[in-house]
Length: 341
Image (cartoon, rainbow, N blue to C red; front, top):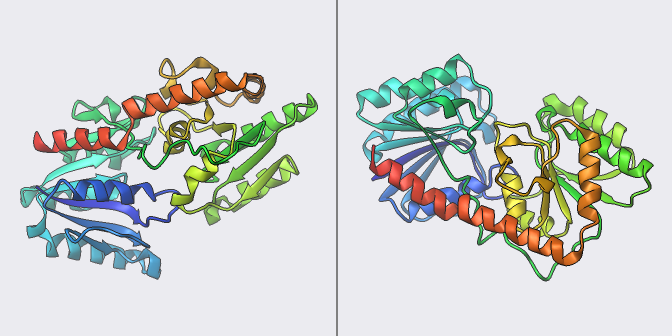
């Protein structure tokens, strides 16, 4: 089988989408050829059976140029793919779904956002199969949807015994955006400070220009409670996870933020409010959504655990990722679904 993959960005160094490089590399080992069309491209290292075409965002092309290039590439490469795998961007399915139907191409659509709209419905209608990770994702309700592994490379994300964890350290790593609810973490830090509980907190991530005001507000609210750092290349993140006691993620249910699973794979303790994890991980790792008081209590509780208990719990968290959300499990699931189309 030959694949066409459409994704936002191909860049092994990208802080948010670097994982896609690993997905494509693994798929390339199992399929005759892969054509990738992305909105922007950066650094990549693929085998010879992978071709990459960019719509030109890294060159600051216009939206009309993106669309022109998109239609040009899908038509130019039409004899080089049998199945279309659209990752996250429903616009591609809406723009070309009917063309692919006429050409006899099967369409697979991956989307894990909790909110959908009219165009999401069109994309689902035009797709032969839909994938998501969370049962709370918008597309999970459709009969043609299948739940999949999140695809974490557990050979890359793992415990590094040479890195010393900083005692009572907290990490947020990810995009700086209102949907990430980082203000709740800052409120929890304020509570810990009032209770004279020592901690070191670090917030690592980039924000888009439209969220600059939110970022400024967060920094002003946090004061000296947390250190701030820009987003780092994807390949550096395992070393960062391994430095911390606890990883905190405040993403609401529906999304299945991969950073949570990457942190778990590195055997550090996590605190999440996402209900997707209910009854899947120890309740000590789940706090009430948007509740800074409960988050502060859970942080204090995890800080108080004995070293061996922390180690055992970290090992359990990694086991959950290996069993349910590894890259190997994702590849097996994708290939099985592709074969049945």
